[in-house]
Image (cartoon, rainbow, N blue to C red; front, side):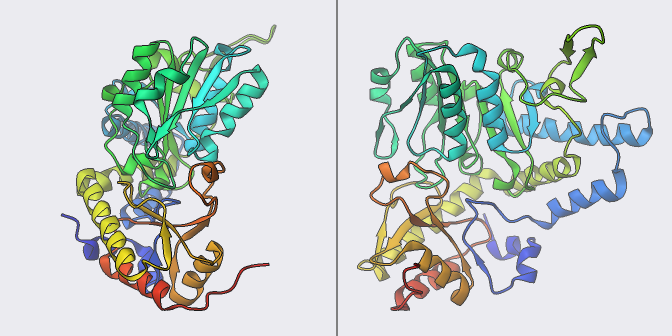
Length: 409
């Protein structure tokens, strides 16, 4: 069971911002002390590069570095540890996948995504389509989820890639990877399926073997870890086919001085060019331990309870004032607008006068205005350091304010 009071004490942010209510965890989660300690531990006790195993200290660093990779393998149920590729984040991961698959795309080929995708899962495919004269099509949706029954109507012999978020970052309606991938592979086993797990990694269990997806990616900072680090996972045989987005030290096995030939190392090194973000990888491992200590099941359950309570209070006290766009989604985001008030005016009011941090705008999902009536909305996202009392204060701040900041000019 989640005890938010005990959990909140583990986040030093609240010691320095005791009056702050943080409702923007969908953008980035706060960091528990154990994660900060792990980062400091690297800098104060290790300090060296894990690729330098000539020294005892370098070997010790490498052991801890690879231990984090192993933790992530178990966390997502990957078949092999070498399938875990450290990347700067999900955006990088998606760009690596798109770039790495470019040789498989020819004129007229099709790439399928949804209109709810974050820009990180749109632009790499747009660019690939532009470069290869391919086509980007949109997956059919019903009730804000991918419509399994209609998949066969959009998948053709030219479809090469399908990429979608298992939990989109605004509305939070879940797309079940197992059933969606199974349907796609039934239609055409050769289609490559990519899942953006940036939001979903903390909102549903990740099981890549059960899902049978070809690639996934997510960022540590969405799961109480550091910014600037994440993973790309892929099936081994497909990772070996990816052209590296970045080349350099650490990933090459040989460079020929008499020609332009070079060869790459084995996985995972071949896709991890340059010096690793070692400190944050240490922090990433601590974040996985932190989540496992609470259990993902309990985290999901608690966040869902917060969402349901918020919906109840909005219906009770803001029924005539707020328009909710995702009342029935399982994801712990509440997306709404206040009638006749610009969304940014509301969020600035909450932040400056009530110490409540929320988010406004299109939340990097530029096509969302084709899915719901408003492109720009207010997003409240819940996490384990939030409480019913926090929600009460949010609702009170919205219900009692008659004159928000006024429309920005």
